[in-house]
Amino acid sequence: MTLLTSKQLKDYEDYGFVAPIDVLTLDEANEIKTEIEKIENRWPDALNGLGRNYVHMISPIFDKVCHNSKILDAVESIIGKDILVGGTTLFIKDPDNKGFVSWHQDAKYIGFEPHNWVTAWLAVTDANEENGCMRMWSGTHKEKIQEHKDTFNESNLLTRGQTVQNVPLEKTIPNELKAGQLSLHHPMIVHGSTPNRSNSRRIGFVIQSYIGANVEQVIGKVYVQQARGTDIFKYHEHTKRPVELMSKKDVALRVKANEELSKIFYSGTREKGKY
Image (cartoon, rainbow, N blue to C red; front, side):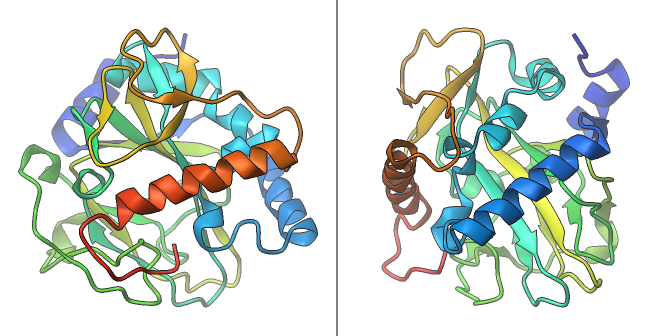
C-alpha cells in the first residue's frame, strides 16, 4: 500500500490539503484525455452542463481512475478503509475561456455529513497559474462554514456561483500539478481558480467526493460505488461499475443520478444555472 507519509498527513491537517501526489503516468493521464475527446466527438452533448457529473458511471476508463489503488491508499490514510465513490465532476477550461471557479467550501452545498470525506482533484493535463489551477486558502478548514453569496455568474463553473466574499489573495496558495498528479483537499477549505489564459486545454477530473461509509447525504440522494472495505451503514444506493462506454442502461442511470444531484446543489433556491 502507498499510504500518505506522516509529513503529508501533517500537511493535510495543518493546511487543509496535500499535493502533489503522484498517481498516474503521463500515458495514463493521456488515456483519460483521449476518452474525453472520444465522447465529445461521438456524443457531442454528453459532457455538457450536468453531463460533466458522474462520468465514471458511463466510462470504464473514468471508473478505473476512481478505483486506482494509489489514489485509494492515499484516501484511506485520511478517511479510513471503508470508502465509497460519492460522485465525480469534470472541470474543463478551454483556451482563453472566461470560465472560473469562485472561492467556496465544498462542505457548504454538497450535503455530506459528517465530514469524513475528501475531494480528490486529478490533473489530466498540467494545472498551473497560467491555465487556472486551484488556489487554496490554507488553514480555513479549521474554521466554520463561511457565508457564501449565490451569484449565478455565467462564467462561474460552480452550480449557483456560490462565492465567499473578500478572500485575501495574498494568503492563498497555487496548487500546481503535473498531468497524472493528484491533490486531496478537506471539505472545509476555501478554494477557487482563475480563468485559463493559456493556449491549451486545462482538464481536471474530480472525485467529489470519496466518502466514508458512515457519511450520510443530508440534503438529498446520491448514487455510490464501493471502492474499498464494506458499507455496514447502507445510507446510499450502490451502482455497478460500467463495462462499456455509454451503454444505454448506464446513461439512463446517470440521468437519474444527475437529476438527484441537481436537487442537492440547488436546494433552497428557485434559480438554476447550467450545471
